[in-house]
Length: 488
Image (cartoon, rainbow, N blue to C red; front, side):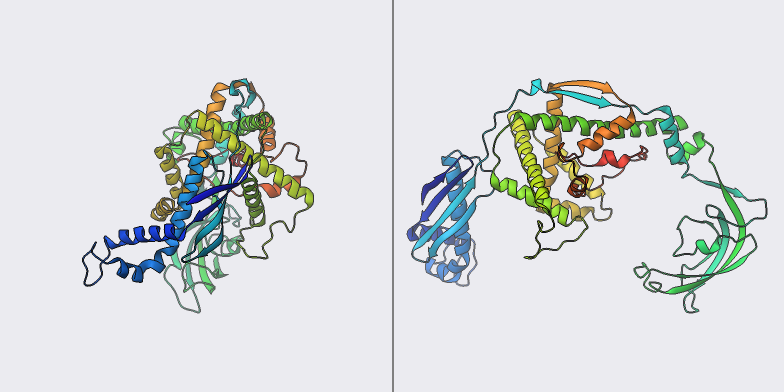
């Protein structure tokens, strides 16, 4: 195999690779010998099959495999002999191949740039923090406990309204035929809870104890029971009682119903959850400062292929953020973008690639790694998002390396950020909640100089929600602001 350099630049190297027919034949023979050690052919023992028989049966079928191995071998040889740090998978272009005449192809390898890291200890950051006020905690406690409704009988004679509960008997039928699950007695139904199908509850608003009501509803087309799907049903309803919602008593008994030992424990849990939301916003802001500092301090050209790949990824997210998955020749992601938007997204792409390379280099120099346990926890977290499908999720990540890498990358980035925050200068400053929210929102913007709200909103990619912590309900206002993925 002959490898010849035909192009050598800072971020790209190109090689011409030539393999003679004899070399290819030798590789074919070697592979056939491997096959001959185990293959079962009538009349021959394994390992004793003549080469002529092996060639007649397998030579054509293994040729593609042999050539692929040859390309991979030459790639690794070029990388190792020239001490190359490839940025992406090399591009291979076959120039000529014909049985008996050998193989010739070109191999183009994008090179990772040399990065001279700044002195991380010189980075100065201001970490804005906030603590929840008593009023905020009390309001959150009120919202959480309001879901634990209690009902008491209405003594006065009045009509039911949304929010009340009726004690009813009901008996339903479809085309005059009663079906299982359409009958109940002494059922307490909260009006407005959407517990029953279609407009069932709405039609009972205005009823009084002792009333009889005929309710007609239509089951949705995708209803779980095929016998009811898309069908009109008639329910005969007898109202036996009317109840009204009362504010639950804020005591230990209420807390125990919600899974906590006491009201004090419930209050502490809510306070901790609010503080966790605040801390997430604080991290968004301080991380943005850090990334901006790294961006300013490091100047180098990024590999064009990596830049183009990230640019296409952003445009793909924009084009399919409505949930569509159309692909094809006519799927032009740039079609609806102005020149200024294209320029902006290329700037964002360059920043992302650049910061990714810087963080990777920092991690490499400081031996930061993602442990198997951390990666396993990330997979478990993903599996929890799909109850009943955990096995399929585990198998997917086990058999899809690129998907597993998509979980590893953000963990690696966060560990690297944590490392830098530990050694650089960080001053903590307390601020009000509203200011912290504003800072977190600004940190979410792709670029600080971006003044286009339209572009900023289009840029945001959809993210997967993480499972809620057990016994905790996020109670912070504008919670969604703190849950968004950090933007570089």
